[in-house]
Length: 293
Image (tube, rainbow, N blue to C red; front, side, top):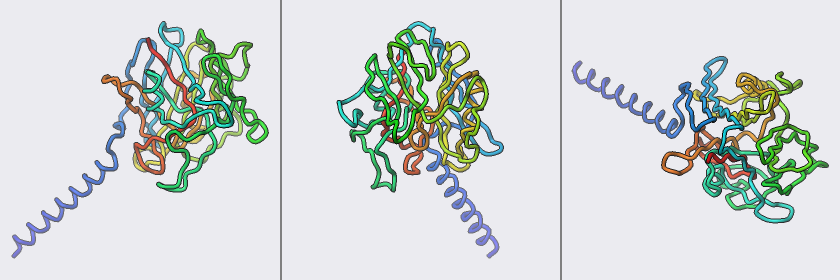
């Protein structure tokens, strides 16, 4: 009798353990391992995975790009049409594949947008949208931003020769991408940043002389894996990399970092989350892409 009860207890424990392990693997499938790492992707481009446990779980993905390295070129998503909504929404992976890029990250906020549930959201892939801030691609300024409704967003300008600068519009605009707010100013955390809300985040920054571009994507909304970052956290991450100036881009379900994999197909480096589904990419407005020739 006791032997039967013991066997049943052991079987029950094994079943419970199997369910727990299976549930975890299902929840964790496709996500990067929560382990720090450093890897040279290309000459002049280093990828780092930053893992923090305290005061809460946070995983950040960082690219440091030497813009003086030969063969590196930038691309902001070009317009798909003329008019009030010049872009067709696409995921960051689709952007990378469509333009044969080696690296891509989501860009500025965009409108219209809503997310009320798995079947009630906008945009879907191909739906028309407009960026919120000033935008230019390959020498063409195609959006000046909705200044009356949103105000003037900070903007990163990238010249044909990869000269980088924030907010001082050059005489000839080549590539330009705008963001949500400045978070690093002269090597310091920008004043009055929100240090409460935890969300997935994307940011870009440059060092003092503008040679290095830093891209940071923080995973979020994934308990026990990565809860996200505040704007203050995001600024401190950029400063840790060496940023002198930096701004946040669109965050939340938009935050995605993609590279070209060894098989030539898009490989997502982070764990995006859209409609609370880990691994799901959101179709967004514009992006920042990098060619490595």
